[in-house]
Every structure is written in C-alpha cells, then in structure tokens.
Length: 290
Image 1: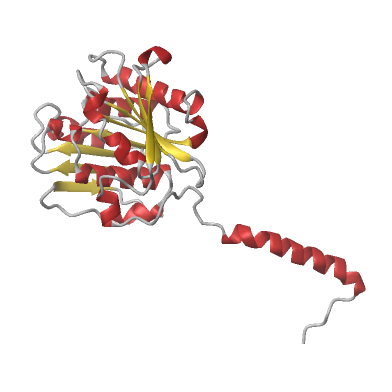
Image 2 (image 1 turned 180 degrees about the vertical axis):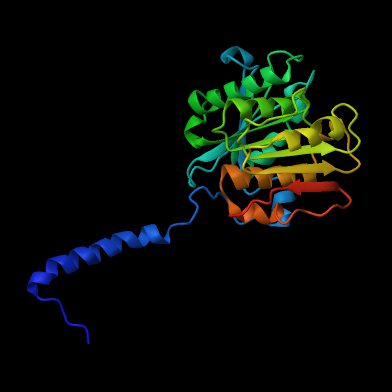
C-alpha cells in the first residue's frame, strides 16, 4: 500500500500535482500545430472549393516593388491561427489571369495565396524567381493580410517560365518549405543546390516544355532535395495548367499541405505513388514518410 506523504513531503507533492495539471493540456495538444481544416478525403481534396471561406484583395502594380502586382486570396477564418503562404507566377507572355484559378482553389484549403503579374510578359525564369521571392516578402512584411501568415511556412509555384522561376527561387532561398513547378521551362536542368521539397509536373503532349527536354531532366537534376516527385499528365498539353484541373489541384494541394503544414494526413495522396491511369502517365517520388 502506498504511504500518504508526511507534512514535510506535502509541499513537494502539491508542486508535483500542480506541475502535472499544467502539463496535461500541453500533452493533449495536437501533435502538429500547423494542421488546418478537417482531415482530407478524396472528395475534399478534389473539390473546386475547400473547407475555408475566402476573400481576395488586389495588389496594384504601383504599390509594390520587385514584381508586377497581383491578387491575394486568403481564408477569412482567424480562429485557427496563422496560415502558410504560396506565391504563384504565370509563364512567358502570360498575365496573372492564366494561373488565377489556383488562387481560390489553394486558399480555400487553408493557405494565403498571391498570384502575381510579372514586371514584363517577357521576363525569363531567373527574373520570375526573384519576383516570386519579392511577392512573398511583400505578403509577409507589408500586405494587409501579413498577420494571418506564418512567415516560416512559405512555398512557390509557377507555370512554364514561372515553373522555371520556382526552381530559381528555391535555389536562392532554401528556407522555403515547398515548390511546385508546372510544366517548367528552364535552360538549367541540374539543381544540386535546391534543398526544398519539389513536385515537378509535366504533360505528355507538351510541345513547348516537353517532359523529355524539361520536366524529366529537371526532376533527375534535383539531387539534394530531401523529397521530390514527378507527375506526368496524360492527354495534356502545355496550356492544360492554365485551366481548372482536378489532378493538378489534388496533387499540388497534397504536396503543399504535406510540406508547408507538415500535415501527414495528406501523405496517402502521395505515398504509395498514385498509379498510372486515365489522367496520369506516370508518377515517381521519394515517397515521403512521417
């Protein structure tokens, strides 16, 4: 039988009990403080809108430096804390509207998103990478939604030369948490300096940035990133990425959630690799594990 504490032991016993009481809430807290929203399902991750109501605000070109302005999409819910953020660049000779569909799609899943216009429609990948970083700096430092953002949880996306820009941005800023280049076009194929988890997407019928000349060698050239994936769309072309697409959205969301939010609830959509089928030619990855 356990003995009751004597008088001299009572202060220590009381202190221990108080310490345990204080420790209990911490022990009961979620294992991952960055999880946002309910557990995902196939239906929720492929839906046109996720669980978060969103709003948007325009960023005039005249009010910023380093990029051409854009549009911010953000969850209106402030009860769950801050969100990760993603900057998205369009491709060569393309305005922001070409990738605008991704803004509300990602924001409604629990991200602050800025889709940008570039300084010139003819900007090359390196410039687009710098502009993606400038837009993230604006988003976290000056924008009206900066208090909604966790500045340590940021990612980049882009299409074509904007996809090439995501590689440039990741190479320059290794603190980024995720990158998703879509049909990336970049003369550089070897990226040994990129340490950001990167999902490369290509299209089998792309004649502008063919998978053989761009997406596949870029994926192979990511030799230092801790996690990477390659997804090739079936019956798709270079401009497929400029319109709403369930396969693109599903895997982009899963990748961003897994690495920006450290949310392992999205891992089953990435690992084991999704099989080839009507929308996917092939999928390769390093199969991230929690």
